Length: 500
Image (tube, rainbow, N blue to C red; front, side, top):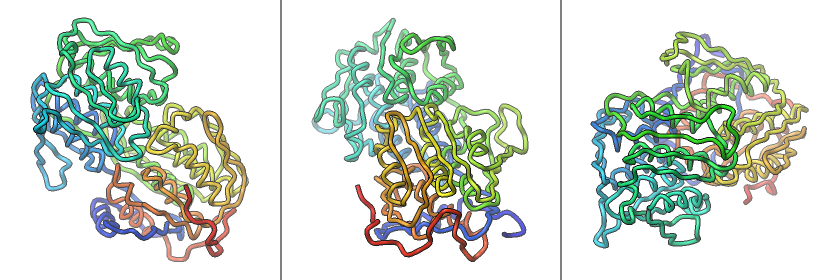
């Protein structure tokens, strides 16, 4: 251990992105040598960045964004909003300060010779779900398409709701999925004085958020009633908070309302422009904080907000339940981001039983800790996460498959995972083009030797330079790796290569 904490910051992130660029060789996940003593500076929140970009693109005046995440997802969002008429200007070399000039209504599509705009969504859920709602307010139709995996992510509930509101929706492939053409139809949405709609939000809270973001731009606002149980309600709360921060009034349902009885009312009015500062990504903090529990020692993340709608704030409650300790130091006023969150551990983990329905994006990190806890004799049960089957990949199937590939005992259930005690060994893991499956492998590799990953670069979706940050954190430890409890440090068998 070093005498003082090491810092994994912007320089490390830059170095990591350079060394991994264009690499096709499997990434060998580094094993933690000794206890850590690191400070990790993280870029802006992906979820907050997406909402800030969209609201700035339709605001009543220009907006300056500070702390913006620049990653594949946010670049796709910027490109999509540019097709709809917004303009973006970098204010510093890093691109984390950005000036946004909003588009007028109706949104003016940058169309091709055929009169249609084209938007590439990649694998970004916020782009493929938030942007179609805006396209319904445009002056020409747009075609949205993305990566192969994006064509498997559900879209029908959102697109059905937009069609009911008067938008033109034409499927260009399998109904309910990308590619799709969305347009204003006869312009009914731009004339709507009293819009009401229901949406099945059980597959993704992004359907609800997309319509809430649309509502303020309608002449009479929008009343929205989700049917079914909406997962990840923290993200809906984030959407409501960002609208309110920009001057849009939103009425929320009563806390006791049941599924299908909760109605959100978004009042009309374009969001305010001005200055917006984006918090660090607390979900992406998870793998680094988890590293302290696996390796021992401590890892600190500065600029942790004292009050936030980010799902990643749940690390303060989850990590102590898995064998760690968490402290928040510094200013704790509601508006402060001057606090530092520190996770510490001893390398001894415990299992967990947890309903993670509101924080589904944290599941791969929790599952990695649970698998390592299983190697130490502890069982875990993760529930409320059936909706993860519709994420970048079917995360439940992917996690169960990869844990079993490592020698673990994982069972997929109707709404989650059961992870039972079993020793782990090295294996060649598969990322499924999913950034959170990649960080799952990195956490496992801290405690299990000879873990490799086929695609660490998919982390650029939300965290460019991940490998540089990870290496800088590990550089604060000692030099001699030691086997973790319940792991096998022997040679990696050929039969345990990456699979489907």
